[in-house]
Structures are given as structure tokens and as C-alpha cells.
Length: 247
Image (cartoon, rainbow, N blue to C red):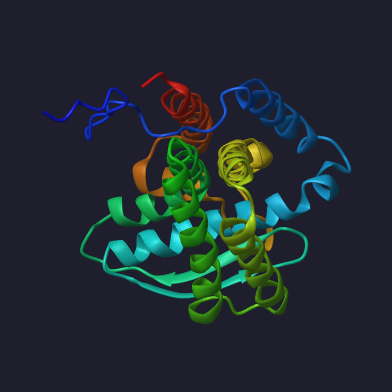
């Protein structure tokens, strides 16, 4: 009779999938706080310039994609060297005031929602790699379809290629940390535009997103600005809690 293999391991394992190193959590929290502070001081934008451009892309894509989801048209996207941007879209009239209000809100809320998705993807190395590939590819895709400013035509594909390079060539721990760091930067970018959230004017572009929400939903612009600032913080904290929760 054949002796059983004492080193036999069951085919079905209860071991959880590998997660990103937990020792990075404290550093990421410090980075989030430092980023929020740097964005409020003169010269801070130069240090965080690539993340400013990426946050602007998330913001403007939020407007355009929400318009598409509601049956409208996303016509073009312009991003400028000073970190500003504008999305041009056409809305359907069948949604009443709710449609334009949702499109206005999708801009400021686009970065924290995208950031939360990136952070949550970091729980699995496979998901982190896939998410980096999707983000890099979508940056390139958006350049072909919507980006129409000269600066955007250079900066957006460059960011896409860098992110794809990390996804394809970097070690797993670099991929995991990168996707979390990008997620945190996207979430805290809301606080980069605190003055914008609590302003009625968007300069030469007209009224701000929160002022548009006031126009369609009546409550004052500062209410919507405060609500979105709080929501962004909650989204960041909850996504980090889930990402670092024990299996």
C-alpha cells in the first residue's frame, strides 16, 4: 500500500489573496495631509504639478462622462498649463434640473470617486496592476477622443504612458503603492479647489460648479461646496479602511 504524502497541501486554500504592504498606511496618511497643505501655500502647485494635471483630468472627465451617461454629448476637453481645464458637453432636456445639477457635481466628485476606486483596487496585486493598465489606457484613449488643447495633447498621453510603464515594468510593491498614492492624491485634490467650491464665479468660464447646483437645486452654493468637501474626506477615509481591513 502506498504511503501517504505527509507534505500534501489541500487544493483548496483559505489563504487570502496578497495585499499591499500595510506599513505604507501611515506614510500615505502623512502624504495626504502634506498634499492638502501644500496645495494651499504659494509654490505648492509646482511640487505637485503632475498630480494637479491628473486631478484636473479627473474633474473634467467627470463632467463629460456624466453628461454621456445622461444621454447627452461629451464634445471636447481642454486642459491648460496653469492646471485649469474645461469640458464642453451638450445635455438632454428630459431630466429637468436634476440632470445639469448631476453633471455639475460630477466634476468636483470625480477625483475622490476615482481615487477611492484606485485605493480599493490595491487590496489585490492583480487588481492593482489591472487598474493601472486601465487608467493609463483611458488617459491615452481620452486624448484621441476628447482632448483638444495643445498642452493636454502632450501632458495627458505622457501621464498615461508613465502609468502604463509602472503597470508593465515596475515591481509589484511599486505598483501597489503607486495606485494607492494616486488614489490618495485624487481624493485630496478636492481640497486643492476649496476656494473654488466656495465661490460663485469660475472666472472667464462663468459660474462655478457649486453655483450651478444652486441655480438648479436652490440651496446655496456654499452648502453644496461644504457637502462635497465632507463627502470627499469620508470617501478617502472609508476607502483606506476597507483597503487595510484584515481579510
